[in-house]
Length: 121
Image (cartoon, rainbow, N blue to C red; front, side, top):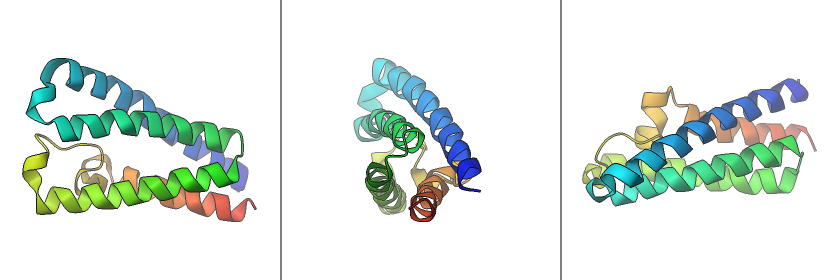
């Protein structure tokens, strides 16, 4: 079960990493002034997702836990900000409204990642 879950996490994070890299590069290059906070978060998220892939693939449990906790805090914080101060975001980001537009994958992946880290100890 843990091997299957780690593969699922790697694929999920890899897809998000590639998507966030492309999206943030486009946003920063073409319309950064519209929502600098949101577009900067996209670039940070892209790097973060690649680190998550590395941590899970190499079975660096402590690093994975740190990555997942930071991500979960980020998702929850940005999710709250999108409700409280929607003007910070020109359009929905990956984390907006806790990942609603992405099927809540951004909030589910770190939870699954923490469960994987707990079970793989």
